[in-house]
Length: 295
Image 1 (spheres, one colour):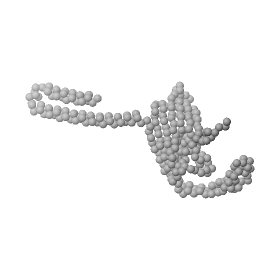
Image 2 (image 1 turned 180 degrees about the vertical axis):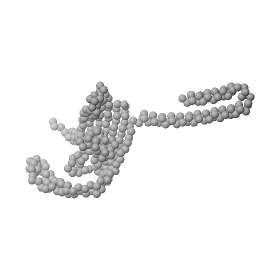
Image 3 (image 1 turned 30 degrees about the vertical axis):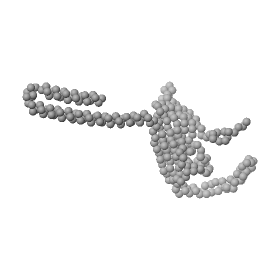
Image 4 (image 1 turned 90 degrees about the vertical axis):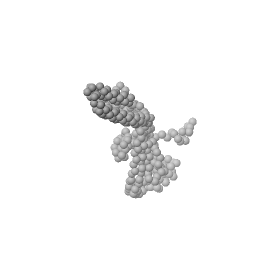
């Protein structure tokens, strides 16, 4: 491309010189005009050479820039983005009712005898104790590292690593206040509730897309995008909402899904069929029960 441009400018200059030399004899007699034309032609040639040199530099710069972009797109398969939020809340509860400590102590004392436990649970029960809870200000930090990758036209990767921390709390130890889903540290709420200062795997999955007799099919495997779903993503300012409705499922779990897009086959907008499988709790790994034998 560059050599052809240089050649074209030289051809133009040569043609101009031939035109001026091939003028009628009447003009050739005027040597001053011919000399002026030659000087003008030389100036034009110098301008063309300078323009060509400038274009060569621009081409080299553009080639370097495009080369870097092509190298980046060829080697970097994962793109990252960050969400960060600092929040301040003022929490006040009145008349929180809990079981009296005397009842708790009596149940703990007879916990080895089921018949005694049943009789204690039969009542009569003492009146519940009440207390107020006031936390004028509590600060939290929430951090999400989002990941996206396109392995090939049919295979995509999505992931998110999260940290959710209360100011001044790094223990990750919670107490039970009556809600297993909110107070006990489980696999399903590790990234949804404040848990010390550790990073947690919120979602990490692959999606494979293909077609089966003109029906689009997708298969996904990994840690499911089942938190901050429809409705909650706006309250949480979450740009990567989950797939489930938040009022039904807001719980992390590992599993798989198989989806069939039936819009074209049924001519019904949004029609699809989806099968899901997940494991929400596993207690057969990492404890001494795996080493016990009933034989």
